[in-house]
Image 1 (spheres, rainbow, N blue to C red):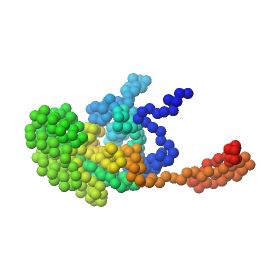
Image 2 (image 1 turned 120 degrees about the horizontal axis):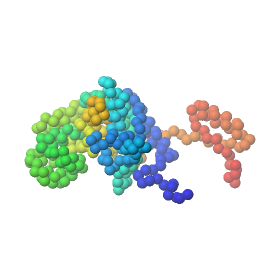
Image 3 (image 1 turned 90 degrees about the vertical axis):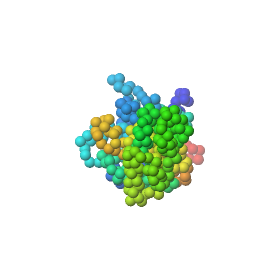
Image 4 (image 1 turned 60 degrees about the horizontal axis):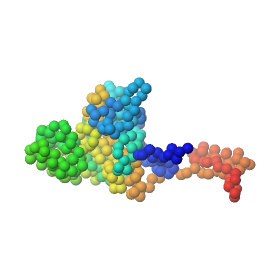
Length: 376
């Protein structure tokens, strides 16, 4: 047999032993915390129809999807993102449901991206979705739950950055930017690329007052005080309402007592274009990317036939585990099984002993006793 068969493809890996035990423990802690808020477990398929993640939905670009065909000729994809799947599921099974719906889940996502930065192509995510509540209280619950989930796993040194895509879109609309320019500018602003944004806006001959406002977005982040700066920078109703919404969110987070973990970033945007309001990203040292991503997506369910507001987030479990390890945070895992050795003469007696341990909820391994030469 070829040695190549024992290796995994690029971007995926095996997880076993103590590492996997820690992963299962952290997953259990996060679900436990989400369930304490009333979120109920849900599982959706690993692959969906291509249209669930189409360009119109505003999710992962087609070139980054793992696509294949079924026997009927339908184009299918391995899910790159949970949120559209949850929206589809809610629209199908809760079409006439008026009360808020709370989902929580764990599963793997698959993105056929470039591996130049060492990113995995298969990652595990834990997430929650709150569907049917448009209020800032729902935004606050979602943001507070992120913080409590991370704290419950043992992570202490992190920051939840909060923005609102409507602030950016309000300025773009006021400046008269077309959709293509807005999408290009989104990349520069999100990446804090001041000079790239400036060059684009000059090329499009954007009026100076709007250019100045858009360029300042690259530096418009920090504590609650940054919202005052943001408010003074704009005059359009859409952007002002976005700031007002963030101010209301902050008051809710103060009620939860988690405001010290929160900062604001008016230039923070997402590659997922289905977000319509609040954007959430949590960062910690030891990991290059955000370990939590989420936000409000009030129009996404409409693509599947159910008009309902929604908000949610996902935690990158692989990145979270890396952060816990690099920060020296221990993850308590269950003790290993007790080894019960036997000889041909003592097998029946040792088996009874192992059965007693298992009956008490313990773990026991029956193993033949080896002599000095290693023979059984």
